[in-house]
Length: 245
Figure 1 (tube, helix red, strand yellow):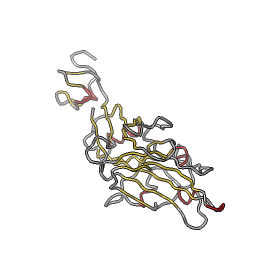
Figure 2 (cartoon, rainbow, N blue to C red):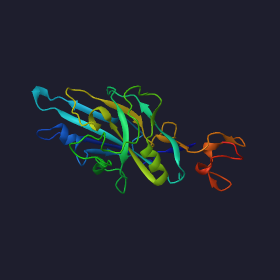
Figure 3 (tube, rainbow, N blue to C red):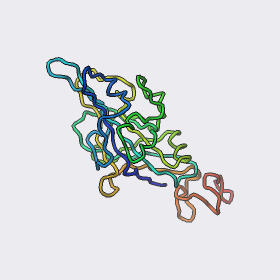
Figure 4 (spheres, one colour):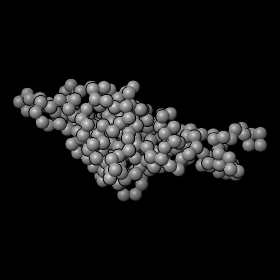
């Protein structure tokens, strides 16, 4: 078992269009966000999809927030059997929504930038992410813990990319509105709060819990998932030891 923590390059990008004739599409499909931070220890808007009604019956405005988690996985070269993304929640004034993780592109050189807002593999303006973006985790529709770690199970695409790439980026977005490209129909603030790796220590940092494929017991009291090789043979290539499965 290996735990790999997100880099301090992690952070969030907001898109909140407030110009003339604001629409859901102008915020959600923007190629460049309106705010970026890669130095926050935590945020009450880790993912967000909100609508704000204008006074006097004017056009509503919308705000979309996506968070980018960056992991150096160069130490993992064997087949990954299981991976779980762990995110520590934070109290927020946002109503509970839904959340998932998708494959992102590496952040702009020099750190996360507003231009990274749509840096999602398979994303295209006007289309939903589900079925188009590369899904990295399951969809969590309820049960977000504001005071502890939340677990999202990694997909086969995430497992493969961990094994084959040096750096992976997981973009966390709201699923109900942002991922499905559905504009909120009434005034609401939806999303979740969470911690980033800039938080002091690692007790609340996002991390990947990785278990390598292969046997699942112990050899000489050592858990198999903690071993990469036995007598120079990759653990994933071992089916039996001394005729024992």
